[in-house]
Structures are given as C-alpha cells and as structure tokens.
Image 1 (cartoon, one colour):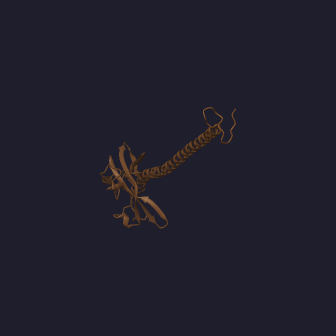
Image 2: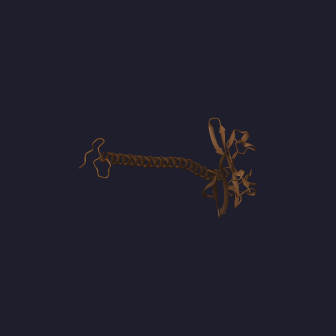
Image 3: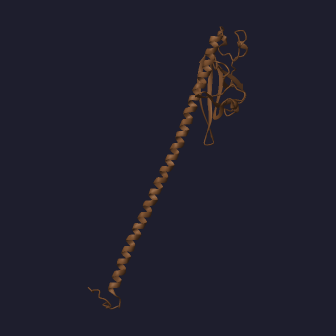
Length: 221
C-alpha cells in the first residue's frame, strides 16, 4: 500500500494518495455535520410543533372553562326561573282564600284575581319588584318569542356587598346601580288540566354565537 510522503507522487496516474485520503476524510466529516444539522432541525421542528400544540390545547381548555362557566350560570338561572314562578303560585295561595287564584297574575283580591290570570301559551319576562320590601316576583307579558329580546335581558344589580343577576322592575335599571349582562331569561307557560307547564329559557352569547339552555317543570294547582 502506497504511503504518503511529502512532494512525492507514488501513483501511476500522477495523483497524490495523501490528497485523496484527505479529501475523503473531509467529505466524511462534512457528511456527519450535515446529518447532525438535519437531525437538529428535525428535533427543533418537532419540539416547536409540540409546543404549539400544547399552546392550542391550553387556549382551547381556557375557552372551554369559560363556556362551562357560562353553561353553569345558565343552568342556575334557568332553575331559578322555575322556582320564582313556583313562588308566585305559593304567594297566591297565601294571599287569596279562593283556590282558583293560584295562578293569579296581578289580582288584588279574591273577587278580581280570576280576571288577571297567567295566560296560556304566553311568553313572560320574570321581574323582581325591588321597590317592594319583600322583593316580590311577578310576570310581565311579552309578545316576543325571541329569548334575546331586550324584554328578557338580565342585569347585575348591586345592593351593598351583594350583587344579584335579575330583571328589575326599574324603568331604567342602568340608573340604579345595575349593569347589562349577556344573559337573558324568558318564561313560557302553557296549561295542562290543573297544572301549568313552565319553560324557563336562558340565552347568552359565547364567542359571538347565541347559546340557549332551558328547563321545563309542571307546577300544580
């Protein structure tokens, strides 16, 4: 095997085996460096994709939590609507001796309650009379079937250390320490024999989209 000697050509084709060997070694080193560079690029790309994916997952999780919070609020408000209508029934039972006044809307005595009964197949806004010391609930009829009507908008009203979401009886709730919310509550009532079926629908907005949730309950005479 030819050995490398300085300035001596030992191959018949006139090439220097030392120079050839040197070039081969350089190519191997370059190849290894290139492979290492490619591996590094791939590794960085994979890490970036994983990190991006994690960020997207976290953001989606945060949005999901917000949506879950809204849904939880909607469920609570819907059930509250049913109970508030039930409380109207209970108040009527205490106020009137006549059992036929159980579904009175705004009667003031036994003699006139039957002239102002809660209507069948009718939409209502569920109001709270904040001017009354008992904060009495009452129904205000609406002709709008759209739950997102301003008739049904709920407000957050502050009373000292307390903040309550409701539809107040004020003509201008914004002037009474109340602020608008993105929630709406509509009450729809139908009758079946001696009971009324109450549908309490909550509407709200999430990421620009309309969302709704409703509860249905029968309230007996």
